[in-house]
Length: 71
Image (tube, rainbow, N blue to C red; front, side, top):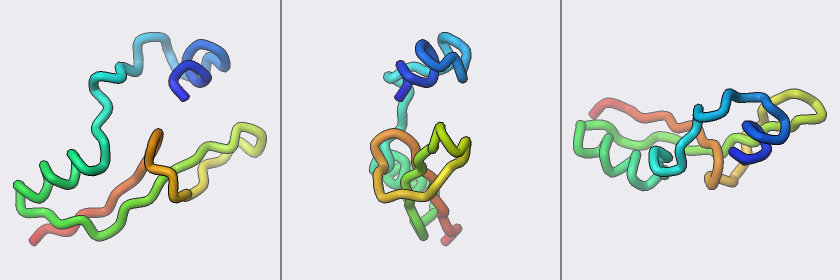
């Protein structure tokens, strides 16, 4: 996804993404749980380049959105 968005399609500036800084959903949930938040919803996000729109999906591997509730 990064190669496509940054280097091929030029949608994002070079250097705007670093794989080492990617936070996976499990690590995010663990960190926020330690800060008195609980996961309410977690969905993947998919960008359809042809329609130029975002859609909710089950795939959490590239883009995701989460809703947390303060305990």
